[in-house]
Image (cartoon, rainbow, N blue to C red; front, top):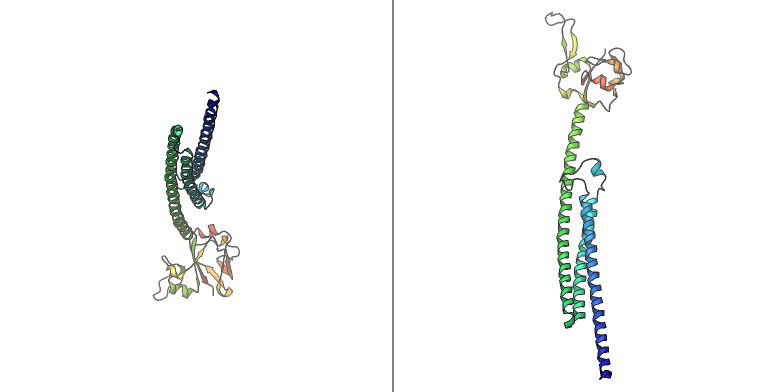
Length: 284
């Protein structure tokens, strides 16, 4: 009887060894699948942190200036690429887990002694598949946030462009000055200058003074940018007299109110502060 029991004990030991080996394989498969899911989650968490670090993302306000300039111009594109990669990892994890499930189910078979372990394994599989579903939802949320950021930054670009145009237009108006150059008769006909004063002798008024008109037509003047123009060339290199209220002391070369050849402005701000309309009449 003792000799017959030995083979039975050996067989039982072999069976236990095989079950132990199967359990080790099942545990290794489960751990590997879980590690893959967790690795994917780490990637998603890193994307979420990177996206949240973009100035204004959480506050729904895009920071203008140094804050936004510290971010690469294509940060949204880079994050979108990472999200695409994370989607691939999620789907790979899903496929891998389902493959492992089939492999381990076949490995466990119908062994009654491993039913508890099989049930536990199936619960783990369900848990991991639920994690993957949550990861898909998280990636959808991150994708929406990237789209939101792109929309906000496009709006910011439009607003900055409009602001830049407005600032440019304001600067142009602030720097705009006007110059009229001509003979006395030309300027009189254009309404740029008028004669005032003098004795009233009917059709003749001796002693009249040539003066700027109160509301001269803008189209009779040439527009210049006082921040850019420092020299105004005069026709025919003739002599011209300044009759508008400008101080010739702020010119480089002037003889009293007379200039010749060109008008060179030494101090633009002070020269133009008295009037933005410069009138020069050609001397005889």
